[in-house]
Length: 143
Image (cartoon, rainbow, N blue to C red; front, side):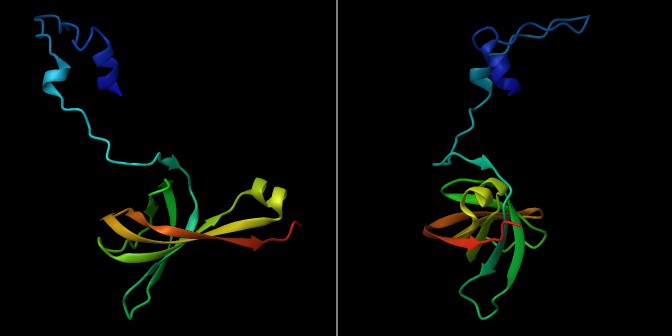
């Protein structure tokens, strides 16, 4: 953000800045800062959804609770204190809980999709969705 503002100021030239004693040289940002390469194919949205994540392909069917931090059509980042390791195939169950959806349809939705853990860190994991998904309508009481 700061670089984009600086870039737009003076057609890629930073203004000369004084510290009171000397002037700093002008810097051409295009020459000194490589642009970030956006590798995502789909737009990402900040959205918090509760979910369960289950390990697949193992005798140990470990399951953890998590929540999305952001999500797109191709994947999501899941916040959890127990992230799975990179490369693991997982079964995801996303709970779309919306009061507006509940009032309009009398139901909420469970999204079932499998994915692969792409990245794992101390706060969670990034998962790429593996194609097909299923939407399951969950009846809820309107009380």
